Length: 105
Image 1 (cartoon, rainbow, N blue to C red):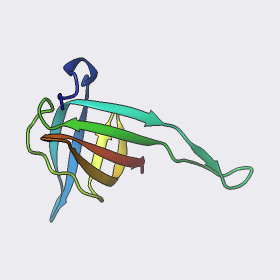
Image 2: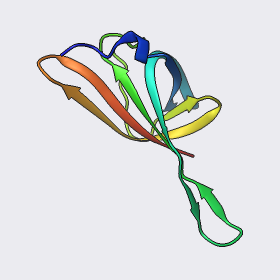
Image 3: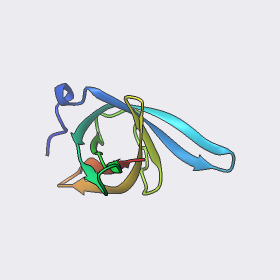
């Protein structure tokens, strides 16, 4: 299976990994970010933004290589913070990509 075309990997995110003193960060480039917007109305005056993003990390073209993602880590994208809900690795005949789903916090 071919890697995700580089032309589609034009986004970047920052991964925040919890450590003893807060978070360590890593800038990740050459990923694909897709948005899903949702607003839940609890009452006439209380609404919650439940937007999500799906990040595609290509195992060949995304940088840096070898990043691990896990539920509970955070992603920063365009000034907004998202909590990772799941990270699923897809392999065909060789490693292909990781799909990361995250919700706005």
